[in-house]
Every structure is written in C-alpha cells, then in structure tokens.
Length: 349
Image (cartoon, rainbow, N blue to C red; front, side):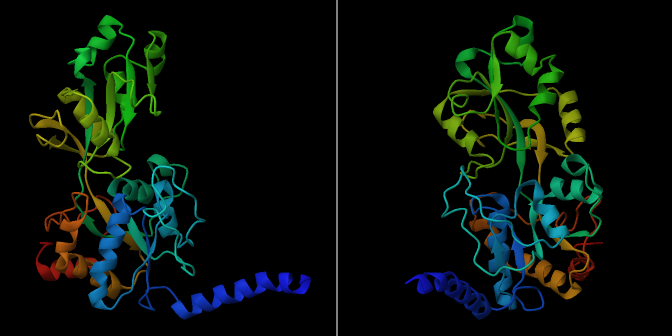
C-alpha cells in the first residue's frame, strides 16, 4: 500500500502531462494562441470570448487565460509570461471566473483598457516604476464607455458638493466603480478625507458603506453585473439618487489627469439620470500584443474583429466597433499587420 501511495502523485503527473500533450501546444504558430483576459463578466474577459469566437472561422483555436487581469495585464503580455496561479475572486463566482485549462503556454496577446495600455507603453501612472514597455502594439480599439459619476441620496437634499464644505455636514461618501477620481473631485471643493472624517463623516467602500452613504463618487459603465460597475446598477435601483453635474473646469482637469475624454452621460443610463449630463469618459477596450507578433496574425485579428462585428452586440457590455477609431491608440503604435488591414479597407486615410 505504501508503494502504491507513493506512485499516485507520479501517476497524476503522467496523466496531466498526457492531457496537455493531447491538447497540443499553444502559441500563434500552432494556431492555438493564448489570450490574456479576465473573468467572463469583466470587460477584458468578455472581449476574450469575442476574440475567441471571431477567430474560429479563420482557423485559430484561441485559448483564454481568465486571470491575466488587473494592473499586471500589460506586463503579462509584454513579457510573454505564463498564466498566473489561480486565486478565487471574492467578487465573482468560479463559474464566471474559471480556472484556466491545464497546459496553457505563454500569453501571446490580450485585452486591456486603453489607459492601461497607454500608461504601460509610456511607463507612467501605475507603471511609473517600470521601464516603458515599448514592445507593446495595439491591434483594435473597441469602444466601451465608462463615465465619471457623482450622486447623492435624494433624501439628503445635496445638489452640489460645495454644500458639504459650506455647511460642514458629516457626510458618508461611498467610492464606487472604476475610473472615477474621488480624491481629485473632493479636492476641487476643498474637501479631503481627513476633513470629512474630522466633521464626523467617512470615505470608504465596504459592505456597510454601500448601505449607509450620503454621496457616491466613481466610474460607471452600462447597467450591468460586471464587477467594475455593478455597484451603480445595485444602488441606483435600491435608492433614490440625485445625480450631480460637475463644473466644466473640474471636468477638464479630470480629462487631462486621467487621460480620458470629454463625453455626455446619456439620460436613462441609470435610474435617476433624467437628462444628458456632460462628464468625462474612459473609452476603449483594446486588443493588443507585442511587436514580435507575426504580421499575418495581427492582420487576421483585425480582419476577424471587423468581419465578425455582430459578436460584439451579444455581450452584456456596450461594445461597439467604430471604423474611425478602431485603429487609434494614442501614442501606442498600431501593429503593422493590423495597419495593413485598415489601410486596405480605407479606414486609415
């Protein structure tokens, strides 16, 4: 029995190796490229599954890494890292943030927000301690808006954040979603976390804060269950909110500091938004890779995403393909293979 128990780990290793070999090698040359994505509810994970379906008719069996996400995403692609070890996501059940299949090789390409890619390429923002990752190349920029939102519970009577400082109200501020700069927004009105807490208020994002808040500040995309934005979906349905218009000067500052664009929140995006509201918007979920990616593959990805645009409309997110912007990635160079496709189609003049 002892000899049998000692042989079991070896047998398991042999079986795992056999399964990997049966599945075949991964990589672009083997037509089994590995895509760095995120959970299935997340924008980068949803885009991974679009790319997987889009490339299938062109002979590619795209493999997805569902946890090549967060701030490390561009690092993983830039360095052709192996998929990181699985860690449960407390915000998403495992069925929607699945473990990667065994045998995935190095990450070949992926999806990320355009601001992350831009900062990684330049070595700025969260990548300021890294060297600029100048080997990154983008392939397609798919529109995916996320707006800066500020709201107050209607029962508070707050219609302008300036009221908080003027009246020294002990307000509880909930920070919510991705893309909103609550510190900068509060600073514009002469407020800091310390001042708010000294007045008896609070700034946070705990389960209790999501119930007991007066003001909420953050970024929100479409009404969805994506973990980045679902807090807005939940609180706008549960509470009566008054959405606040930010001053034009502050919006200009947020756009510059956050490398975002000016935009307009559409009426009806969430319950309580009863009019179009000027704001700042982060837009663009980018499909990207490295400079060493074969031109033929970058061309195939660009072509597939164009010809299979219908796949975008069946996701739970507001993805859209725009021929005028799909080839624009700020300072990040467009991969030559993708550029050839867009020129052939007349999108790039």
